[in-house]
Length: 422
Image (tube, rainbow, N blue to C red; front, side, top):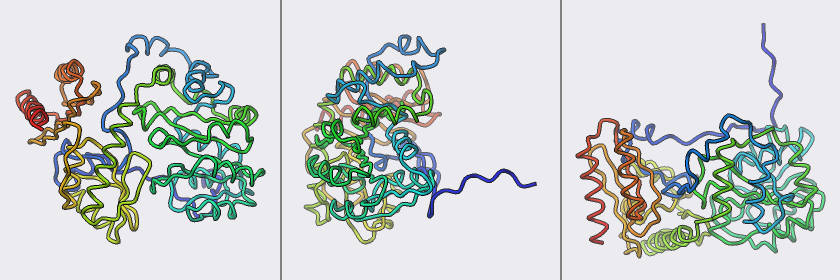
């Protein structure tokens, strides 16, 4: 007996494919998982500090979230410079992309996407049964393609291009297409400083999506918000699934937005991005200007180059004719440059990365106490986390489960000594 048939998606539907984990990469190449460095996810190298005491964040863990997310919307509104009733909440930017597709697309409708771009725009559109047409990353070409479309998806700055349009240009396109919902994904807004949020308050067909995964370094919380006119926000909120963001995540995200502590990290990332890009360009690589937290390198043999880097434990995102490199710490980035045969210019930040058998320590001296310590021993993890926070180091310390205290301590000490010497 045949089972119930799922509703067919739009033409050319392909599901989202997750990148291989560090453990997968390590197993593929006979490496230690701790030695794998991810330059492919466009996330900060260190997670955000959490200033909310764990007990306070977990107080309401036995209750459903407050369904309107009033506190989180208020915090997001204050950060974005809008009013709470112009804010919608969902599970990261991805949840909001799905919500926009659910609200504005259907089997008899059409969406337009840039090519290339983040694949979820097309995936979410086709899940709703809509047709999806690509167009080059050119606003005039995209506007022409979207004249009879129901949704035009834009990413600004672009992914993977890192290219940036002005808010005025996007606002003009939205004004030219009053019957098309123009959805602008501003995941990398903080690195570029260009936003359509003020215009989105005025135009009922313009939606601005943001996330706390990138500059706020809270990807694991899965929190995003949109800015749009009140009536548009109301339409989105009516179609949102109940309580898509967990109570704990909403509490922590609201705290992060109320007291944003990202300016120094964003500035350091932009400086490091330009150091990385300049070094690549000086070595003869085609590395155009970008406005996000990654660098793009154009090359005809991109997949082969990416495979060679992966064999060294350096994971980049490969496309047909480009590789995309997430900015990490200066010392991590120097390993990537060496993998490409590029001499690394000096960095303004004292940083070091040491890989020893079963252990890796990546640290930055002039940090803010951001830490990711995963060594297989909770007491040891807590000890090194306290050391880093007390010394205001940014630290990623990872080790295999069987690593000894001596091995972990020696690796950390070597990294600290090397950073102090730099």
